Image (cartoon, rainbow, N blue to C red; front, side, top):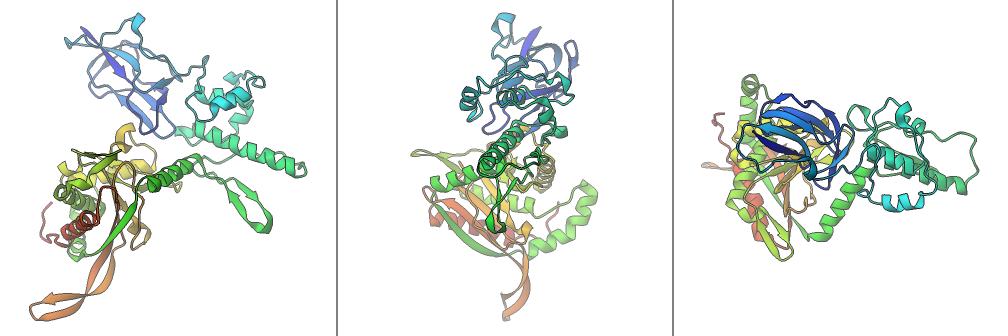
Length: 447
């Protein structure tokens, strides 16, 4: 019998660790392929870890509430395979816990090193046993460094699963508390005690009144990260945007014709998004140099076509789930992938790797009634396509009897691209080709 090392999988971009929330399988349990072994949580994604092998769970290498580094061996599974390359002994336990209840670790959070040094003498041990609420070791460590009592911590509403308090929630609360302290030094002390934050970070809007009735609204942490990414993208890539107006009448009429039958048969609603994704994948095959990234003076031509679809969250923030190998899916498969990713994005149930490795991004500005947009490239990609709202317009049609004016369904497509590696000829030709695939839609196409 061989022993298989189960590794903590990648959580997503810029995520180096995750908290073990719950073990769903215990030592001695028999596990089938793809059975869920444990539940993990990060500040971005709460997820389940499935087993890549079948066998018997031998041991857990980490406990509930431990914060574990990506790539660490978290469990040992005994399998029938003859491969012993993953055999583990007690002496070779690979990567230690980053943080446990007794050994908090905060070195991976920006600014915490300075925070810990500043408050080293002031920090007082906190007793969290009196609280029934779950706190990760990282949250406990930050609270201890900041002298935040468990009672105060209990008043902060969390944005994680089941109201879990994330480190971003706590850091946001600390930021606002610090800002409020600065105001107190400049203003008369109020007799009213400061109220703790009562909204999750994704929706929090800490307000500070200033003269004239204006308000200052602090960005939440996710918005700060998005802002930094957008600024970095503009500073990295010289942006150029090309526009095309497309007559998508046949596409609209075809969808109107098939949507009821499709929903009855597939139990899925067909939107325009999978149609757009299909057109983009076809155009990428025609112009593969749009599916690249830049590394210094090197152009990396991507083998896979992974389409990211920008999705607005209820909080107003943005996430981009990725349809992997989109060119290998038919329209039914694309429809199911789009609907699944969009619905799980809205309830924060995306899997760790479902926001990674995109090679091209599509954003539907038409869903907000906008006719066109100039989107910012999602680095390290080199192009992003925005599709606008479909509007009925009078248009000139050429017929065998001469030109006529007819009511047509029209839409704008706008492609922003990195002018370091994508010139106007390539960018303009690509967006024109996407429009061609949409305009030449077969009204008699079968699904």
